[in-house]
Image (cartoon, rainbow, N blue to C red; front, top):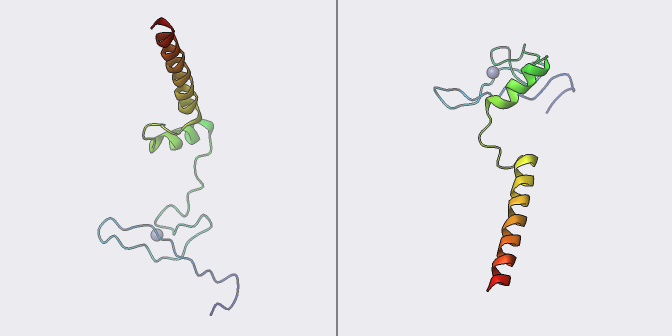
Length: 88
Ligand SMILES: [Zn+2]
């Protein structure tokens, strides 16, 4: 049983490259231990934030922009189909 709120039950949990086990160090404020970015306060500047977002960016298939583009393409496609049907 936990005694109080200031005794965190949590662990850092960063996965080890070698063993694959989660890190069991006590976490710092941001949830990671001192070896795994616990001291980091994260990106501060606008550019830094953007870079951080982009760092693990795959393809943007679910981004708002892309979905809008898909929607527009679909409309064009339907219009084209209609036209084809009229021409028959
Ligand atoms: Zn850790």
